[in-house]
Length: 217
Length: 217
DNA sequence: ATAAATATTTAGTTTTGTCTAAAAATATTT
DNA sequence: AAATATTTTTAGACAAAACTAAATATTTAT
Ligand SMILES: [Mn+2]
Ligand SMILES: [Mn+2]
Ligand SMILES: [Mn+2]
Ligand SMILES: [Mn+2]
Image (cartoon, rainbow over all chains, first blue to last red; front, side):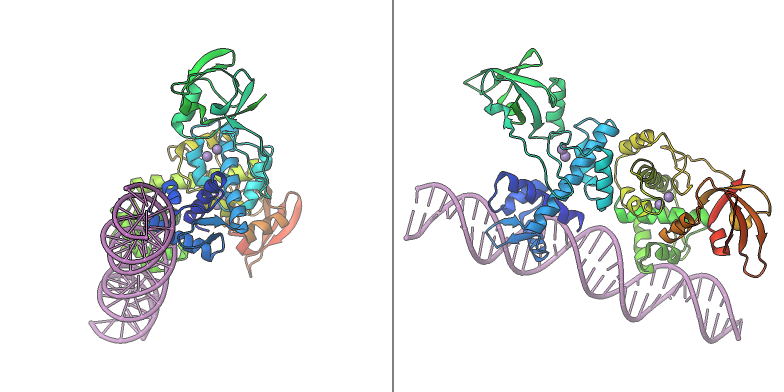
């Protein structure tokens, strides 16, 4: 597997989780920052390798084999992120870019040793689940903060968007995984929320609220 | 810098340490396992980037810039090897191959953090010195076991050859970095040595002796 | 000093992954 | 159900890094 092939497989995987039907050529092109024609070329190649099922004009889905492979790449990405944060004291906004490179290192043994070294973490620094060596991962029933009920006690358990800008905004507002959140009120006009965060009151926009995962305490 | 360019720079660096004059096209081809014509192509490219000084038919040398870059790649390679052995409990024969991939990860900050995490090691698991972030490294006056004087006390400080086969041979003979070695006698016919290793007597071939670095205790 | 052997470079291909522009298929509007 | 818009694929080109085969330069041997 080349780095390029792995990146396509990973993107198709991430898109599949959101929309389980066939994935569009254009959607892939948008995520990889390439042209639709390049995507078509790669889909043919991945189809030849039986990593995806692909029919012209009908979009693409991962095969069993492709699905497992995707989870192994995601496993590597997230384990490296945990390593960078927990052991090398990087901040959660710094690790994604480096993990994008590290996820392509080819050694199953390395990842299993790293997994053990880190204490078999179930989640990465952004709250995303880490597949184990068999591709299994825990699921928690998280919802978006934008869908929260008023006056219930929630905990922040993840971010939907891992961009540097968003993560640094959260740092600035002292919002992190494990923060206690209660929605005090919702503004009709712009869907902004007034929330209680660790005993302090704060107003956040709808755009922020729809990128934060929470669960009931 | 592409992975391919980095591999060429690193090979030219390693060859330079052995023979400080211009490096042959063929010598590079032999190390990289490629054809001489491919080497010529790459030397032109590296010359354009001012990483090497190159004149047709006259061999090649690293520029200041290329030399520093080479040391940064070697630094990454050796730090990762230390990590794999000291933290993830890999054996010294398993790490080179994985480090060949890890050395191309592009993040200075990552390597400086890893360096700190490992306690700023001066040597890698094979006894090779690790350049610091400025490219400086310690030099010890080591010699080959094949050049040792009789009946003097030496310590094993490194291996010249890091192949899996050689390292596993050393494991089998219980020879490791730090082992105490005294040459008891040398056979005229084949230059084999009878040595005292950690209080036991052992015979080794000339080929082994010329791949082990030692220094006086 | 010439011939032979070796080393190196050039010229022309190949493969991979990308691109642009044009053609074809599908989806959406009227 | 056409017409229009959008999406996707095809065709052809390009750059990087490799290759083979042929041409040159350099070194070694006679
Ligand atoms: Mn990430
Ligand atoms: Mn993450
Ligand atoms: Mn090594
Ligand atoms: Mn080493």
